[in-house]
Length: 406
Image (cartoon, rainbow, N blue to C red; front, top):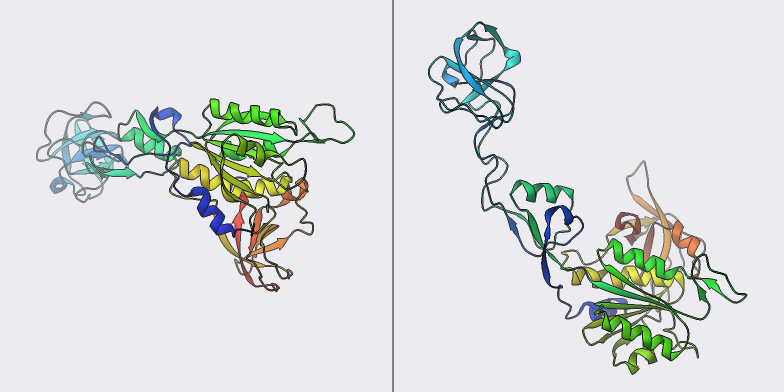
């Protein structure tokens, strides 16, 4: 089987995927959820002309320096003045309070002085001064939030101001995660002479949760068909939207996951792609459940998670952005020519203080088993197949792991 290009593999992963069903969630619980429909204002804000300052509401025709105006009442937030401001009259007004009928400007209190029941103006005010006009913020019916928006605190504040007690959002995808391998033990457990501590499942879980998914932890399955098939059946019975397997997707005698999935009825989408790290990536469908079989090497697993699992989850969530952020940068030093596979080089980046150019420095060790190197990297440099040797200062594209929160 020939190696599938990365772009073609990603297209297959998201092909035909539609956003999950919609549910209405109480406003306070919507942070991080993905909006499923446009949100429009249910009211106008402010709903009246409001004072932006403490001072006196007057007619602009009377608002001249030295004018002596009769104080006839008070307007406070939540308690407006019911009367009308006439010629040479003033109403004491506070920030956020309705501007009374007849008044069309506010003179701030620092530019006035009181003389009994009279207000003496010490400055001239212009029409509309210090008044927030009705609808200045938004008008009823205005669309304010678009479908696909990942809801943040500012969006919640706006929706609340627009009088929405809840918002329609896409259901969170349920992602079953299955680590495989007799060599694996969980952190804190006794480690046999030929065993290692599992880390990939924790990284992929964090990735799923960072993208808004819910995790069904299937634990670690041994390298035998009964254990694998039992875990797959559980993922199906609990209606997981995505099953992520980790390890066992290569060609060795103990790599059984593809056969186990096929026995359960998986339709294989592809297996093996032209990338480094992450060549033995597996993709398929098992009924409505999406299957991603990630490589067992820790770096390969995380890189494939970023490149393929993240876009799949975002598509299921109806997000308007398909993948993690990409940026342009330049190499800080030279890097060798590439072969047939698209390369994702772990690197550090820094902003040049003199030129404001983002420079990347690939890390010296690129072995896909090195968890410490992956933790130290803050970006992946994308090297296309057959890319020639890169010289210092040459442009490149990077995936910004830091900005994505990975």
